Image (cartoon, rainbow, N blue to C red; front, side, top):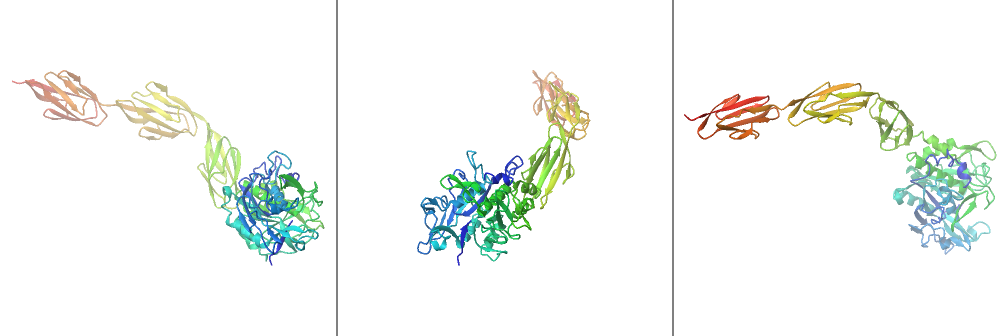
Length: 600
């Protein structure tokens, strides 16, 4: 048969360790980038406490039995998705002046509400989380299917819950803004079980969601039983949540079990509708008190979203175990065992040791990571996906040098850390560098510049000495003047052509040596003219360009031309004369002369 399920802050949020200077909120567990899916009686998305938080809506509700069961989908069909699909103020949600669908809005507010006016209540557990509102209930118009004396009530058919969970699984990665629910909340139940009910038809859906990183949080029921809970809380892969009272004891109405209840959370006192309950959102933009394990479960769902926002790579198993291991032990009503009441700030502290890289630094500098996550001064930590290799790079502050890594790395190069399921710690040590003076002997025929800046020496520039921190990678560059060629460095520990690069570790003096270009001098004579290839020399017959400087190794050809009535006779000083042509390679200072004579 299609079974029928029943729907089962101000002080509670501080109680579970969310607020205060050492609260989970202050440590970054705000719920940002996460969501809670509320499978319930719908949500008033426009409520001030929930405004802007609902990122997706759906409705899976039933029309059946000739009007005895009526769909709560606003479109009156069995299915609706999109904005407004889970509206808890749709007309069919009202029975006279009573809103039958208030439960889901109240639950959503506990998990992720936020008061824009800083009023009361200030916020739900995961105040920056989004909400996925899913209507899974139907209206029951018949006293036989409701509690005694009630003619109209709500119930959620198992088939609708299964379709809703499948819809969530299919759409996990396509919700608004790419936000994926960290948990779904099931504040509903049917029948009671004193042992695990893993035969339940909801278990495969719960398992699929858990494998995708989504927890299913279920209320254990309000029958006050000492050794039994309602389904689906009895399913082993669900997180079963019981309720504590305002006095932080197990609430008298909450079902208990030493083996089936995983966690406790505030659910309010037993009196209905008074200030002993949990104060949260109510349809039509107001607030109200409710109590029950239905109120306890969203405290846990919100806590999971908050923790996942701070530690996005923590698994559901890790989060659940941390909540269990760090919770406040609450004795059962009849004694004999305790169950942990969630304490989110303690759970966060425990989780920070899982898949987390923590870095401590001495001295002055920054450490950055690839992929991003670490970018810090003296201390920081970040969680990473298991299996990732994180590369850390040290960036010394001015006047400091990076000395070495410690703990999880060694040496002074980049540090690579494998995240493999346990906490990792790395130390980084920077030391103040000594200052050393670097001097350049001012050269003729050229200049020298430095990187980093500090030296600019030669010609009219007189910055020929500067102080650099030890460890500085210093590069000196020789720049020859026009008419000169760089020849060599003297005193450079690592010369490479015109560049002298070295790490500063002591005072140092270097000298650049430049060589003036070799010069050709053509002696001016009577009765003829001498020109050059390439151009530059044009000497004689009224022309006076008789000198030329060129880079060493330049090949020159001189051509002698006699004036009318005269003839070329010979070259003096030419290394390779061929008639009136003189070939030479200019590699030193040279003087040549063309000799002309009159005709006889």
